[in-house]
Image 1 (cartoon, rainbow, N blue to C red):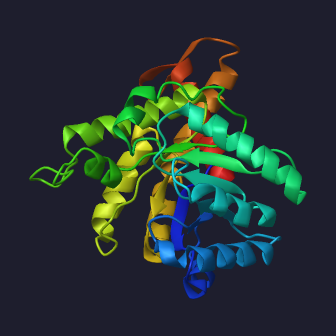
Image 2: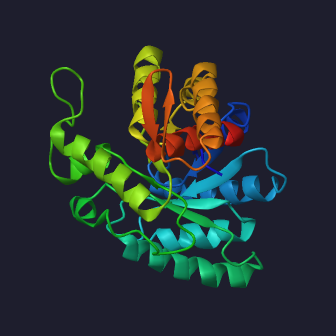
Length: 290
């Protein structure tokens, strides 16, 4: 499944987890990292485990963001939640595909221990949160059958390099973070998995979110992460093809079908070739998934 929307939910708030179920998000990300104080992690792990265990018939995919693998917290996170069979693990602050491999080994062992189907738990790294990560974004291809998607983040990267802000005067990302976004997008497609865009942090700015989400889809991202339930409807709409796009995509496919194997066709005064057909088929597939 390709996600249009993923909603972060604090792992130590049962109220917010239950409320998130009605958000319309394609997936919930139950957070054990930034949203939870370290002192509350034992409580949060148990709450996330119980929430997952009670929802074996799931309306949404349920993922868990664990703590980084280079901390002493990650294995305890995994040991607590794998037995409840989350659909996936969101891995923060990774540096390369080697961490996907390493996490895969941990999941192999824990799935075997807990009677969870082997390979059932997918992995998505936040692949731009450390400086070294940007130099390895082309290396995720074939690293693990568990790799589901790549996403990116700008806040932790700014902190890692000592930047006071990641924006310029007009509100756009500074070049370093635009580069991170582009490399994530290209790295994901090079690996043959979807690219998921990062959060729009001002959840009250619905117009800004809509513009940002539409730009992301046009750029080639398949979905976007949300930090508030009110963002979900906007994101879902932005990543769902509208009627005009669908009608045009259908017309492109029909034109090639009628062309009897020709590599180029004419449609509405334009000359189209195979990349246009591929784009049209991707639009139709996205709508079917939605």
